[in-house]
Image 1: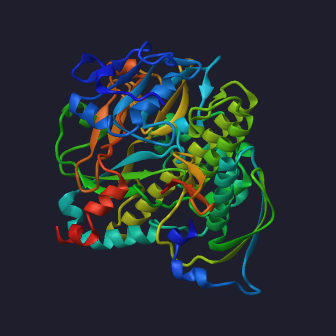
Image 2 (image 1 turned 180 degrees about the vertical axis):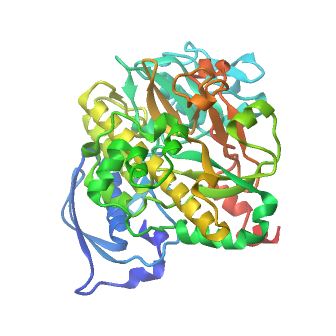
Image 3 (image 1 turned 30 degrees about the vertical axis):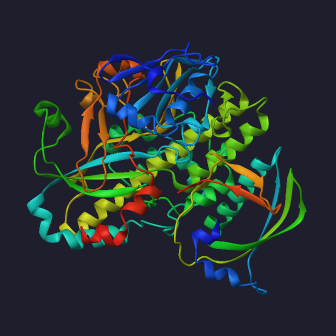
Length: 108
Length: 417
């Protein structure tokens, strides 16, 4: 999500001692709600703190719960503004390589 | 999902088509579409009319699920869709309001003619850009404290007019006088308030705009005179809403409703909640609060437009007045019904008690913006809108997705044209 909000090149950065950390704790009855809530949380943190997040670390993570923190950087310029995360035509699936993929529509 | 075809429609007249509830088993009321045949055929290309069938299948839905002429596919509930639910046993749908709660339009009239401002156009535009942050992620230094944000959410425009951000008469020309109730700031999350605090008095991005316009043609002299509109006059149109605060309210309550929902949902974006339930009432109060925030946002933009005109043209506050301000993403209690309008405009007829005294003899102004650079229209509500719960279109509609548009109209090509 933040790759389209800001400059993709910034994602090479791996953080420093001043890297902003934002903690999250999300629970949901299914993985769709969990994913939308997770992304919505990142979006809200981003808008409030003027940051983008290039990584997320999980202390707990399964289909119904996600606890961890985002690692961020100051967001200087937006390439696009994402205002919300929708459930519209949302698909979460495993591809042939058994990797998880999601198709998600953002409200611009 | 049931797939609707042109053959499913019965023609009522050249501009009204209906699908009866017998067509699809789950439907509780008919679907009615206010479109010409050509536009209807276009509407069948996206999923909007199937979404309308889903709405016609919800418990407590009254009379019809309606499509305005500018309908297009939305999240769960189509944009340009209207549905009313009985207050006593009906449902409230965050998806039927949309993410940008009280996205709406305000029209200002000025005491200027085109030739009086033409030489100052660039100065005026620069000043407006300076006074009103607009575009991607643009914020401003917070004008109000969090305590004051609560006042804005609870009271709407009244709260800031008392502080000097407008004329006392301004609120007369705002739908519901710029203050929806019941509104309760305590039902709006702190995250939502944090998202909104720096966005009050900003235009935002996407299809939001501020346009300086010239009145080109008058179709009804009497009505125009009452609006105070004449040929050659400069008007200003504002299209914006509740920004991140409204989005967060929608996000928060969609999740709350999903956690409470039982059984299979047709579409998660269409999750309903009994209107009179605690959660339903909480959303209603939070939605009204977010709507008040949007009314205040448009009022603050008006304030900064007045500041800009004063600085460049030495104008007085009274030189810029409101013709009308309306919401086109909202759910409202009207005559015992909860009417959801998502991308649709309320259009009350003459003599309606909700109208400002000045407009009571002619009907509610209905502001219909079109694509920037093309003409916009001011219409009036009439009695014939009764069958659509006094609702009409909200804009030009969308014949192409943004993605398709971007592919066809590269910036370079657009600039060359």
